[in-house]
Image (tube, rainbow, N blue to C red; front, side):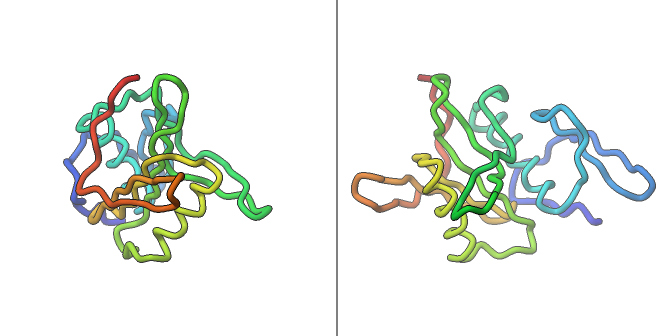
Length: 151
């Protein structure tokens, strides 16, 4: 697998090769994970959230489960505030996956369960952010992701 440069800052990951299979050490889950193109994006975006946007590691949850229409699904990244409230839901895709309306609809469906006020969708090359207004059943795209604000 070729590790493509992404439209995110580079970070010093611990990568190991085990019998031709690449693994990356995930700081959040505290274990090595298989390095897939989607995982490459997820790990970069996690570091972006921590180092560039100030989100504490302790408030990041990866691959949270949820039930949607009686089916088990997994969200890529959920961030909480220091009161334990969900504040950001992130859907990561491999760089080869174009961010389309269908991809955005997937994260929006997940958000029917989570009801998180900010959504992000990224393939590592393009990033889209939007605020959800549940009261008026609408969303507004944001040019960039805001920094973490405790409280």
